[in-house]
Image (cartoon, rainbow, N blue to C red):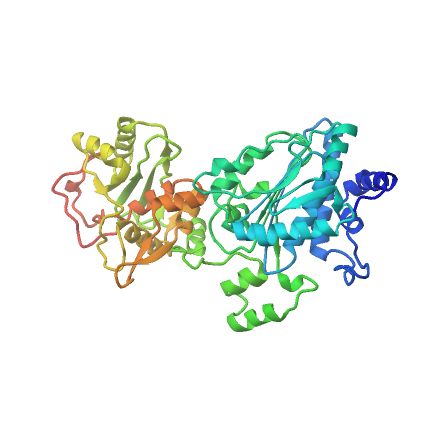
Length: 513
């Protein structure tokens, strides 16, 4: 209900003074009827401890940015990722931050999204509207199912008295499409941009990539918050916590719901009693930790991590195998990876992009001549031209069709078979520390295949690319080193190998790696 002009002016002056506008805990305590009889908050004195800590962290960021500007430096952006167990009050915090931004950063834009449309409409935005209704200045705004905009009188006052452009002044519930991520783009506002992603574990990498473009203007009011139960071991939300280069750009929080006041401990205690403290269900629902292995994850994180951190192991008698995943132009890379027995680290991988077929063939020929591998396996999907050129030059290379039939009946195709062999090898193998390789190996998921559902098949390369935002070129290049058996160097007559080229008479030995 609109107050008198004098009361309204007093409220505005209170909310817009820096002691409240730039101190989020004070703002939240001031704006909502904590402890007031007859309100939904009559039995609550304020936010929970972890919520207060997050509000204080934002306030400190605001103070730090003021100092930076005074020193002639550009203000920094605030990014925060929160992984939690079930029910600590994430949605309430989303609503408070949204309302603070609207109320004190006049003319700003707030985008809110979630993993699904029902989540966004019935959970996240419902919470935003609930807390707006409770706020002392809730009448400044009008809401619909997926938007909050200034009320007509407030909009006119901002334009007339403060000369603020209100064309982009709103909180908007934004739906997204994995098939058309660019439809999510287009947000720029010098008055400030706040993006909040709820259940972000289910939001694809492509939407995260587009969102990066919202924050190109170096304004003080740039905030990006992502919240989720950490259910998946792949995707942008997972990478924020684990992938070097991405992790350093974000603040992080994991919330164990046993530490949150006001939550009935029965659920947490029941799960722990049923499964044990280290079970993935407990890690996700209680501890706010990512699972050790996703329900459809083909290669466990632990296996890839250990291989990347294991001391190098050499076996000079093993065949040196070169796997090449070929891309043609576009954003994908061509990747060449070497493996000799347990060692896939000693010879660094080679990556290139933007080359035509002839140039790529020349690149592979150079690698063959330089390192003299015992076997060369090339993905025939995009690499048929490269294979043909190399063969005309006299190189013996093996074409590998990922979709062809597996040599083993339990695997749905050749690609699944190669990844299965790589998974087995990881228990004693050594990998380089590539973040892309780690993601390519651990993000791929599987399903059951065949009439009897008795075969395992990996998701397609295209499906994985959609989910992680790029082609899994490094993982496929490593997998190609398992496409074919080659004789051990110490058991196979050296006359079958020559520098760079391979004699047609080279056979497969039963003593292979």
